[in-house]
Each structure stands twice: as structure tokens, then as C-alpha cells.
Image (cartoon, rainbow, N blue to C red; front, top):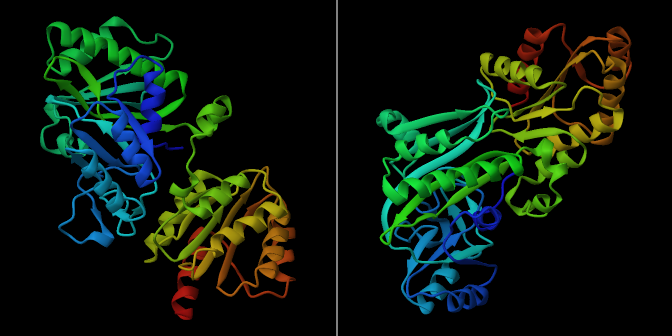
Length: 399
């Protein structure tokens, strides 16, 4: 789960992390009121969407010459003008794709006199099973570009969760940022604070870009992104309350209500599987046969007939879907239960696109018999390769 910048900063402030004063706003009037509460005379008006690259982004409705989603304002009147242009319009960034995201919230912050910018992030390193801290002197830039062009400017430190954060970790970050004196001490302190927040909140990723050094010698978090391990959110009802469903795909929200793992993709063949590894293999073999998957949908290891029906509804809610491939390996899940769900779903949604089903595992013959006796135009497949070839051919034939 992702949250907005202002929400992340409010959480970090509870751990003592230094952030510029700022107030969120949902309307132009609230933005003006926020500016009047801040010291000024320089303000920053920031679009709040779940995507990076806001400063370089463009608003669809305002033309190519309009400013992006992060703007400086030198008066309350300029804050008002920025808010009127940004709220309700669609911001397109490198991370949103061409569709963009509508701006429904703003964050008005106090201006900061910046001397230098740095990059600092934390994430779970799956390879080592540790928390990785990534630091760079090249703040304010895309870290991917830094990694590609000047990898020597990136310092990576991993922390064993059993050992926890130690002073030498903080010193390594400060050294990587090339800081000395009081700024070195501040960097050690803020790194420890960020690590404590990362662990306590079950974060999946915490990115500070930029961490800035002000001209009066203070380190402040100027921008931040924070995401959480969805499997741990039950421990954090306060964080759950920060969820903004307007930033999420409606189909993904509906899927989560039924404990389904669903991610929309750009192709036209819907995929329903049981298991993440099987899903990856299914998507790969669809691409190998010259087509593209429309989604990743995992019904899990013990799906009921009702769950399968909901999965079909979600897949078919995407108008781009021109065919569906069901690939099930029945271990805990029984193939006959899946078959019953497929037949029930196909009848309930009045299935109008080609459907290819590959079943293997527990009660596989009973499942195949149920599909064969359904009277529905379901195409059976013997194995995954056969299934992929058949669904691609069916979709091409129907086009």
C-alpha cells in the first residue's frame, strides 16, 4: 500500500525526523488558508498523487508549456493561482503513463533555502534478506539514472534485522554522503530515525529524494515516498486509515475485498491462476506465443467457487480483455471445485470472449468432465504450452 507525501511526512515526524512545515489541502480555499498559516514568503505547492516525477510532469488540460506538479509560489495569491490550476486536473508523469492521475489533494509547504541535495532510501533486499540503505550525493535526480551513469556515487549498506541498526551503519551513510562535522552527526541521527520508522511501520520502501542541507546547516526531508507490506497492515490500523482508494485501480480494490491478488496489465488475454509462480509462467508463455497478458490474477491455494466467480467478473470488467486463459494446478485446491466455479461464472457473466482452461492435479478428471458437460464453448488444453497456443489462436480468430 502506498500513501501520499504529506501522510508519510506526518508519520516520520513522530520519529523525530526533520521536515519543513506543511499543510494538506483539498480545495483552493484550504490551500490559501494553509499558506496563511506558514511563515512564507516562499511557498511550495505540491500535487499529491501516488507517482514520482511530479515536478517534471505536465497537466493534460493546461498545455505543454504549463508548469508541473511541484511549484514555487512567492505570495499567497500565487499559491491560490497554482491551486486553481492543479486541483481537478490530470497530471502525467514518467510513472503514471499517458493516462495520468487526477490531482485531488495538494500539499502546501514552507519554502526551504537549499544548499545541497542528497538521496537516501531504505527497502527490503530480497537477495540478502536484509534491509538495504541506499545513499547518494546525487539527490533530486532519478536514482535509476544515477545508477546507470555514475554508479560510484551510490553507497549501499545492508542491516541484519537480528542485529538491528548500529552506529557504524549511520557513519557509513554519512561517509557515503560525504558529510563532515555537525552535518555528519545529523546524517547518522536521521538515518537511525528513518530505520526505526521503517521497521516499526513494516515498510516495504522508504525513499527520501531529496534529503536537503539548508544554508543554515540543517538536514531536512524535502520529499518522501513510503509504501508498506500489505501482509502486515493488520498490525497498523492507523496506517490503513491513510489509504486513498481514488489512487488505486477500481478492479484491484474489488479484488482485495475477495482476497484476490490482481494487477492490471496492458495486454488483451486475461489470466486466472493459483500461485504467483504459475502466474509468471503463464504470462511468459503468452508472450512467447506473440500475445500479451491483460492482468495478473492469483486466486490463491484454496479458492471457493464463489471466489472463482468473482475473479472472472474482475477480469471481464477490463474492456481490453479479448480472451481468458485459466491455468490451475490443483494441490490444496481441487480441480472439480475450480471447474464448478468456471462454469458458474461463465453463465453468470454471460461469457462472450474465448475461454481456454488447463487443469492439472487433484480431481483433474472430475474437473474436465464438469467442463465438458457444461454445454459452454470452453476450450480444454492438455498442458500449458497447448493452452497458450490455443488462447492466442482463439483471440486472433475472434479479432
